[in-house]
Amino acid sequence: MSSITVVILDDDAFLLKVLQRTIHRAYPEVDIMTTSDIDEFWQLLNTKQDLDLVLSDYLMPQMNGLDVLEQCSSQNPYPVRALLTGDMTLSTMMRQPNVVHAYLAKPFNEADITALFDNVAALKSLPFAFNVRRQLGAMISFPVYPLILKELRDLIQSNEFDLHDIANVVSQEPIITAKLLQLANSAYLGFVRPTSSIDEAVSRLGITILMAITTSLLVAKNFESSIPSDVHEKQLNIAANYASCVKRFAKQAGFSLQHQELLFSVALLSFVGKIILLSQAQSDAPDEHAQTMADGYVSANFISAYVLKLWGYDTKICNLLMSCHDLDGINDNDLITFNHMLYVVRQVIFDKQTPMQLRAYCESTGVDPLLCHLISEFDWHSYTS
Image (cartoon, rainbow, N blue to C red; front, side, top):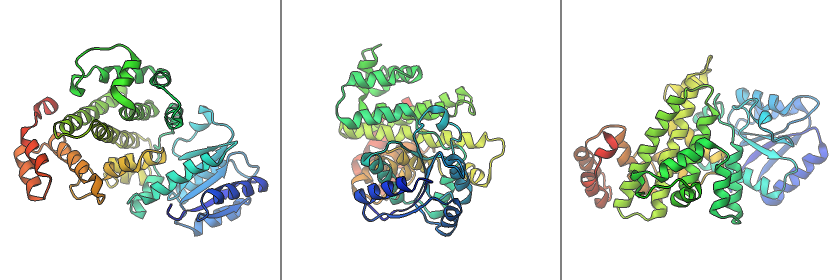
């Protein structure tokens, strides 16, 4: 883990010591500053502009933890903001959706600490410029981490589940069930026999694609009060078309099913940042950070990568999201071909490049000859008409 600097605010001196001990046991190299004094906390926040994590208790006599983090979001939006709370109800979480990036539930254990710090460290490793990270931290439309997504992630990571367990969780949300069934019957994804069973839909789509679909739909639900449903649906259909095309292109290129599902997920999850940008544009009084993002200085894919990393998504997915608009956008040799695949499909679907022009450009820049050949052989019409 790269070095992380954290400041913790809590009026309970005993809990501060427990937290410090637990964190240092898991991560001896983490630089921890603790305080029970609100004035000292603001001094630390103002003098340490490159803090990686701010962790505040929720119930304190001097100031409510949500108010603390809300002030942090405008005063120093660079660090990740986490709330330590025994109340994980939806009403508490939804009060200020842009204030809290992560929650540390009481009673916490070392696994909870590990999950939080691993995400913060992975986020720090992503190649965001300092000013971009500050703009991302100040987003006025940061989506609340959906409880169903956490339930799914915990279930999958436990390795003690079957597909019926997964189906039971996603069935809590009718809109997710409907979309999973729609895609599980999609000819674009290669399914020819219809199904009305959510269990079979889960089995057909697989865990990777299911998580991407669920995440995209839950983000859309988070902003249903600020963005019309037809706009949500249009953006999701655009992303689903892009994702289906990427998967079909990867299949024809001979990629494994696992890699096809990975690429589908990256393409679909690009929808997350687009929805957040649309929500920011709908704000009654967008602030300077929101306007900067809405004007395109921070791309939708960067926003997607930032949010999804905080939600525990694989760094591989986040790196691909950040690089898929650029042939030279990635340094990881294991991901270069995936990056090229996403780039090629984006150019045809979104930038309306002709296959002939795109093939010539890719050949001149050293893209894999197999991919170059496939550009002119692939049936683009089904996805661009």
